[in-house]
Image (cartoon, rainbow, N blue to C red; front, side):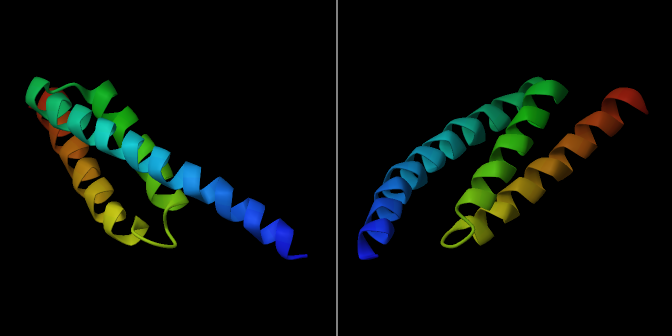
Length: 85
């Protein structure tokens, strides 16, 4: 019975840090996308950040959602500037 929980712990010991690594990579890419005004790259960054935030919701994910919201606002702003103006 307890062996099952230990295996789940090993899974999250690997998935948690790997997902945070993806978050850091896509956070850097989103800053680059804002500078270059790349809508597609920023959209991909928002999606990946949202997935990582959901995966890590039990610990730090609540704070990562704030960054995702800021990326989403930047995406809306760039889209507005590119297509409306």
